[in-house]
Image 1 (tube, rainbow, N blue to C red):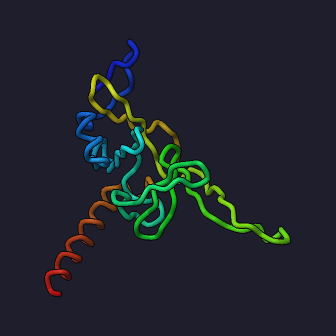
Image 2: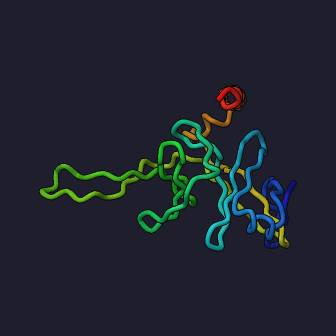
Image 3: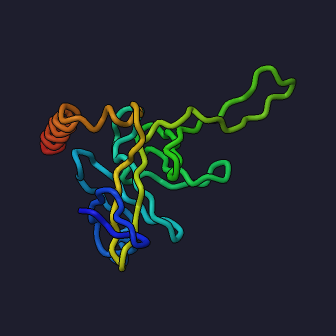
Length: 164
């Protein structure tokens, strides 16, 4: 579906839901254009990114949101990787061993998580998929093969929990 924005037709966008419903839910997980996308409402702003962490494919849906180095980040619940909501940049804390008294600082790993554009049109929320060219690490977890692997793991976990 194309969305008209400021009198111009925007590239294909996907309807997510009514703005007020997403604000209440805070997070919405949608499958669109072959990708699992997480839409987040936090502190008056909407964000969208690939739903599975670039590091090991864990779901980001329940990740905490923290401000790190003046940037809002989602923290992967599985391995605590920090990913900026706006850019998809991976952040890590380290010390510069060349300093006499090294102080921990935040550094960038670069863009690791594919982020998408959120549009609001007449009280409806849409996501326009990233047009960023080239490979971004979270792309790996968007394949059909990875979806099947996650499904298998979920089924095994469900069986294991039933035996407990």
